[in-house]
Image (cartoon, rainbow, N blue to C red):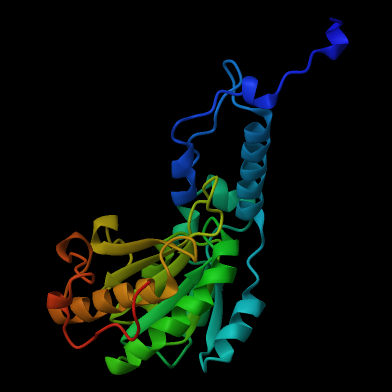
Length: 270
């Protein structure tokens, strides 16, 4: 038999993983299989693509005009602000500058007359503007009916560029709001480059600790749905005003119907 007549089937080269059937239940990188001591070429290429998508996500510019247009159709006004990070490279290397407003933005907010709202929504690009572009408007659309039901006043939506989570405290202190929520793009993972996070702080001011916020993460169609995230956030807002606290002192019990106050889900939570 000539060597040219010898063919080797792929299934005889790649060792299959007995966990393979579990892959349909998660986006996590499990059951990749192996060829010798390495992963198969196909899996290596998928990993390289996911890594490139994550890097691309971090550097995608924040399209505030597009988002402002979507919010305008919901009857919401918007204000543009920037952090003290002058560029994306500065933002990535100096997280502290992403937590404070630029002087120009600070003066812009101080000059405003429509302050002292019950709730202030801040939308920040964070580490994934793609997440903000895709998830922020649908989430707010699901949230607004709950805020109306609670009779809470809502200030103009702040669109913040080069923002870290704590920037919301700096903004909220100037705006004299009672509670602030920042919707921000989370650090992209290798299977989730468009994940949105929501951070809520009661009685916000600059210098609040991370433990004094409540966080809802992985808001996206493949993660926590808009309907469930909106009710969870609304439940926390209602509880914060009722109990006068947020963060570790306020436990999320939105999945327990016995802990409902005024609010109940407007639809079956998916």
